[in-house]
Length: 254
Image (cartoon, rainbow, N blue to C red; front, side, top):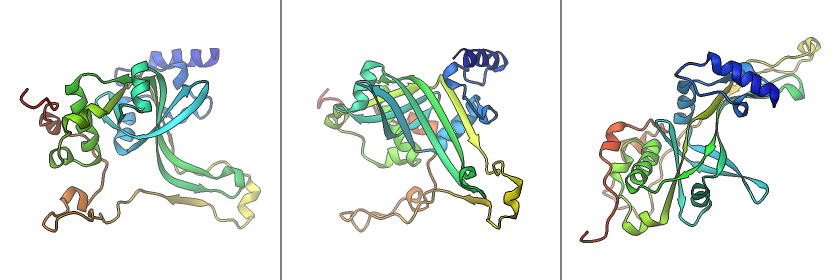
């Protein structure tokens, strides 16, 4: 730990205002040349992803939960049931580690142990917080929809009072963050392997949306919206969508 403390201190001295603070938790043991701490790199990966994995300790054993997320500014939002694990973690202000990984391809090598993958990843450490302000909860729920598909929060029905009361929204502020990128380059190899006749190279991978499938009970006059018909998300969250978010549901007559 002393070594990572020293490295974190050195890196922090050279960091600028557009970088996250380097801490011992964000200093890797190996492949430090693949690590970046600037906001732009982290935001680009987070905005391209849809699913995060949230790691935490529960009763002395590790747990990792996958969750759809969305970023707005320097905050990640997640949602779940009021009776679920996220609500409990947020209420406890529990420490977590959140990771998002984008798999770009597979590196085929000539030897078993040199095969690898090309990827871009973000790791964020912090404490979850439960959002209790109803206005922020509504904006966070709209943010999640807009990240999935631009304009969806205005197309779909807002939550009823009962639905709104049943959902928990938690947030992680992006403060202790690092990104790691592994490109498609070949790993080191033994010279003798060049004559072995085994193919080596790279297979790019990408996520592709297939044709949408309408719900079986959808009225015939309801057409597939353009954002769904030619889906290419996820998307950046537009500020104009946030300006149009309705207020939280209230009691009838209130």
